[in-house]
Image (cartoon, rainbow, N blue to C red; front, side):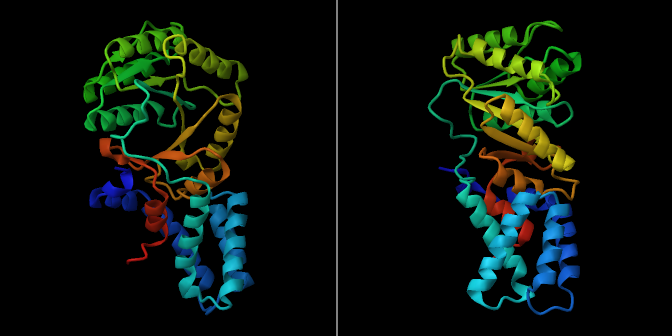
Length: 320
């Protein structure tokens, strides 16, 4: 069964808490924009556009949302300001549906590939290694046999951090000495995982600056070496982005998707920031699904991104 069937009360509470600052910021501004107005007019739409852009939804996605709101108003003839939140929720949810952002399963449902290989990329400081640890925890909790590969050999702290996560979660970490060839670590990890019938392999890579082309080439080398062990590896190239950096996350996504074949995104650190709107923009603008969102420090605070629940949490559940 898919993740949607198991979206528990606890997960919803975590999501609501994680998006609280974004929701408070967005709705506080919307409330001021519509104060004293009974219907949605040009002034309200102009203010709404400014609010969405300032919430890091992004210019292109914001304009798309505004156009959809205008079409809805034109179709329905009269839409009151009281209906604005519901209208926004419906139109944004539909927009994300059109981008096919809701076809992800739970951690206990993997493609038939065995082992399923995930290569994790992203700049330093975005929460990459922590995300790997939380992924390992979630997969193991779902009954999967997980191996981790410490291919970020340029920073001793990165290897140590991954080893700590491995011990904490109870999964093996394959590593080599500081300064070793990252591709060699990936090769050893996949070889060991394959020999031991692992279900999931997660490979950490160096936190590369997104404007360093030569470092990006290293990712291609790692992928090529992986394929000597498992011909179609990696099955998932997961780019981790820090949601609290807003538009910088957009720029990193642009650069990484140009440099390597990213096919999944994780947006971290959404708790404690009012920039949660960046998830909407990234999900809309890139033809790559936002697969995971990070909502806190706890092991359980990494969730699979579900647009319905996300939008309901941000704009208010229809049932509330």
